[in-house]
Length: 440
Image (cartoon, rainbow, N blue to C red; front, side, top):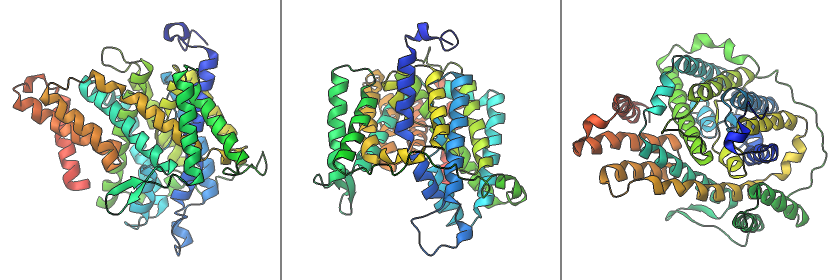
């Protein structure tokens, strides 16, 4: 196993991979509860039951899809990247496709299935990998830093440190709120452990924060340890039942949106995690084709089980920061998602106050890639900066990538360096322009 996962070459151990996989799991375990709530639209009252997906079935589908994706990524691509139904994509699925467009969730699942199958084809032909490897190094560094700012922003929101403000869009939250104070405590503990160089400091800080939260009654003690596994019957196979309904302009727009967001969210996440783990070689992602296949296959499996697009999770950077360097960490995460089917009550202690500090500190680690960007070259600085800043401001990794990739060919061409631009970047320039015109 050590030889297969290249332990000696990457300088890792079983303990580091175990802690890394567990840290990644704890950092993204929230999706087990957020995804069912989103797809069932539990926050919306007076909604007909036929428009809601069964939350218990979605819980099971979420856990199994995450397990399948993470295991495929770990065993085939050997990357410390975990997968699960993507945030943002699940909201688009429910609130745009189902609620606004009036498309039944069964048909929407068919759209997810088709987008996944298209991705499989693109991956097997090598086109998806070529696109990623054609992205200039400066933009890859910008993507990593932008995602760092994005997940820090998400963590600050989850902690209640940054909140909505009608006058200024965002503002400082109520720092006397017990949940916010618990998150602040978690940040302090995490910083102390990281500064002291404690291996797995992020994971240990999450455990300490959860225990303190239970002691002060801010996190409920689990009422029981083991629960029965919910049935998949309400959602399983529904993606096959409405394939004849996808041949409309409306569904074409839906499928293209699934494709677009998943493609570049995944690309950005893989690049960011690989950069942080030191896995990039000559500005290329080793075994990128296998990693992308794992991602595409997970989307297909998730749609059949009954959930929105499954994608690579940027929370994997928390596991990398805790020491993960190989696919064994993803295997650990996948197994834990399967175990979560039986021990779901225990996950109630992993609240946003517990995970927020990990996201905030990991974001601080990821912006280190800013130092690799040649800021004194204005033609590079502009697209890089826009990529970075748009991600948190637009609350979208994909939108940040799109804006940066539009400006890169423009600034380079104006500088007289049009011939240095890879043809694929010109193609992406056109695609992104069309995206903003017709889809955004």
